[in-house]
Structure formats: C-alpha cells, structure tokens
Image 1 (tube, rainbow, N blue to C red):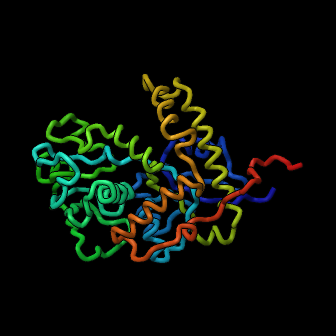
Image 2 (image 1 turned 180 degrees about the vertical axis):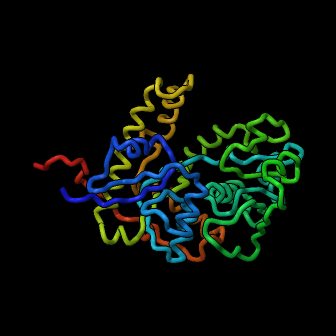
Image 3 (image 1 turned 180 degrees about the horizontal axis):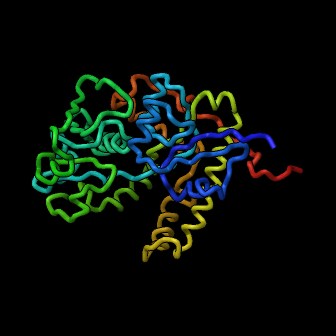
Length: 330
C-alpha cells in the first residue's frame, strides 16, 4: 500500500475534531498528526510568523493580513471557531457607560488589535451602533500576530509594565474591555464589572435574525506548496473535518454526554435559531456573507491596505453534485 501523505494539523481541542484526533475518522490518503495542546495565541503566532505547521487553525483577520503580505498559505473553508461577541464587551460600573455610544472617546482594553473577536466587535459597534473605532483609544497587553503599522488616526497603547487588563478594568483604570474570554473579575463575581449588554443573548439572537451571521473567528489554513503539489489533499481534508463534525453533532445531541442539566434544551434552542448546522463549512451563502463582512471590517480598520477578493483566499473544494459520499454512481 502506498504511503500516506503525513501532515501536521494544529487546532483547538474541540469536540468537532475529536474523531480526527482519535482516528475514528481518517482523511483519505493522509496521515494527520493532530496537535491540539496549544492555546490560540501560541498557535496563531507560530503559524503566522514561522509557518511551523502544514495545516493550522488561525485567526481570520491575521490570515487576511498574512495573505496581503504574500505569506505562502491558503485557506480551507473549515471554520472551527465561531462566537457571538456582544456578550464579551465589559465595563467598569463607575465609568458611566450605559450604551455603546458612551464608549466614544474612552479607553478600551483588549489583548491586541488583530484578534477576529476584536475585529468583529469594532465592526459591529461602528456599523450597528455608530461607534467609529478611531474614536476610541485601544489599550493592549501584547504584540500582534502579524506585524503592522497602525494607520493614521488609530490610537493603540500598550499597558504599563506590571499591570493586567483585568485588574485595570476592575479598578477603573480602564472604563471598558473587549475580552476573548470571561474576565477574572466577572468569573469571581466582582460587582465593579458588568457587561455592556446585560441581555446579550437576546441581542445576539436578534443580530443573527437580522444579518444571518454567526461570526466566524478562525479559518483553517494550509501551506500553499502542499495545496499546489497535492491538490486532492485540500478536498480530502475538508471531507474529513465534515465527517468528524457530524460525529460530534450526533454525540452532543445525547444529553448524557455533557454534564449540564439542561444541555438538550440549549441544543434544541440553538437549532431553532441557527439551523441544523450552525458550524457549517464551505463557501455557501451564509458563510460567504459572514466572511465578506469580516473581510470588509478588516479593511475598514486598516489591518489590510487593499480590498481583497474572497474567492482568491480559499481553495476550491466544492464537490458540486458529486456528493462526495464515496458511493458508486449509476
């Protein structure tokens, strides 16, 4: 039997990739070495700066930036991480911020400027709430995944040495913060910190009803040389990711699998609102609008200098009406 093409795949330790990690699902012709032990920050940095992996889950904004800089990677239409973001804007209660426009002229903390979650929040605040991103001062605590020069009028400050964004928010040194996770003050029940949108779930559901967007945070990239030399590999990878996701869906639909009392209630509600495949792959209508929106935001926020064509950024893995099931035709 011919040797399989061995590829390293760096991604989060998600339920939707579990079958690939456990080799319940195998990509035809490929031997996948699944690397799921890294955090997002490390994984993005090592791929964007050093191209350490053959296939890698990466922040979509950093990917657009890397492509503009001719980094030799391309993307598969596999989106392992999505998240609504209205619920991840936090404020100090004493800062007098009651509505989004109260953020104008204030300092807003964030890990760095490039994360997809931050791009989405800035874009949504601007487009839906009239809060231009250049009217805020962005306070960060780390360097960017992809080096860039902030455009004129954009104010980005590094936090003072020895400080943390969480502590600065709680103590009122920062009026507000965008966070990829729940900040420690909120986790610890600190009453000094609250969400900008207390009813964020309802707002996020209404945002989806209006836009059809369940925000894509990360794309899955592959080295260009592999995509060029083995053009079949990209399609087989997408098929394998899809098979693994479907196994995860089936598993998670069983309320015994997750130690949460009302997990099935949440599952059913999500399907009612988002449809039967919330983590859909491919370049279909909803995903295309999703990606075109964050591509537009990335350009508007000065992270890329030119408008890019979405189809130029992704490998064509569309199987048309062949189905890709492996079954014999008539």
